[in-house]
Length: 367
Image (cartoon, rainbow, N blue to C red; front, side, top):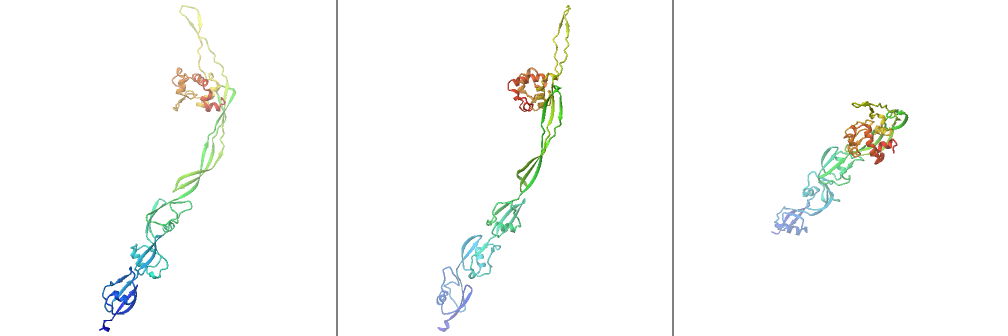
């Protein structure tokens, strides 16, 4: 009976089998008789209190601590698996996760942590388009390479090339370029006046025809995604000098017009009386200075009204005209005669000088 109660039991530890001859009744007894000890995290099948029969298989999976690195984060995984694939399954990772070690590699053969990179969604905005990736690469540089996108030396990237890829990462590339732009601008010619004592007042003569000049400006223009962001002036050269117009102004007084006396007869009387001569305006009644000033201010047009708020040959404003008493001649300056405009201007000059006409008076040397 004693001999007949013996059994042969197969014990597999992490896939390696050994046969045990025993008369034990349970799994626990078999392991005890075989001096096989268990860690509290080891897995045993059947259960320790299960009865055993001849030819039974007891499967033991030893507990292991496996070092893994998932997306750059180190952790320890407790497992009873045998291969890298068992650890991946235990972690419930995506099938497309990238693992540096082969899935079939036995855990007992590991010398380094299991390096795992999970797929992540990345969007890259560049050249007016957004490209989407689902990638397991580790760095921004790797993602750009996978997307076949080149970043120029001047381009702006909103992340460092060495930054780690995280899920939902949004990258943006601004294309930066420069170009040279050349522009030309007109240089307006000035007008110089000289006095001509041999010419009558009110006459002028062009001595030298004026001609505008030209300057060339060169800029370095910076473009961001094709749009101008800034420009830097590199050079500003006068390529054609302007020629100032030279005009002579007559200063010789015109002959005074003859005034004929007119007699009037009184009814019933032979006596005659001389009437007062009636003065009529001629251009010569305006001094050379005022004529030159009007030429500068209005082109010598005493009745000009361009709608810019200034009137007449001396370009009064309505308020200045009325303030100086010009209203007694006409409501607005351009409706008055040249001599009336000059008479009003003399009152302004008496209070403030030629400064009421700053530009032209300086140009004509009146102050």
